[in-house]
Length: 193
Image (cartoon, rainbow, N blue to C red):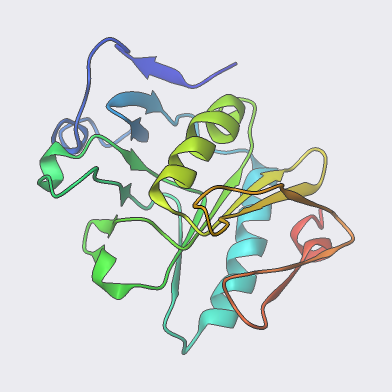
């Protein structure tokens, strides 16, 4: 199963996206529309909640903010108007440290950390299209969480602006969040069922 694509031969913008019915979630990557429906499974939501809670508790009173889906991240190519932006994603979890990127619509610009939790419908998009996208726009850390395998793959941007060799963590391990000095995520809590 894969994400439904809306007329892949047509390029859509954030202006189009804002006018679609609100009962479905969509993402745009380079103008291609991907349907995010149906809602994530229970296990996905549990993992998302556990990750969000650890990040939120750590970030209380600090400069960076954490958000969970649905939360629009608009990724312009240049200085185009919002309605002309062709890439809008809704990562499962997003951390943004530059407050100038935040507005009432969500985030305009690259987040510092993105976490995507794999589901059968989003697997290809998360490990291919979004990997390339997040690397291209300069997301410092990209985590891919595999619920069934109870593993997390962490990609970190290197000095050349590319994701280096990934680090893979299993359910009993802890992950040091590289963008912070002293944040450790306990995967035993994340994958607790």
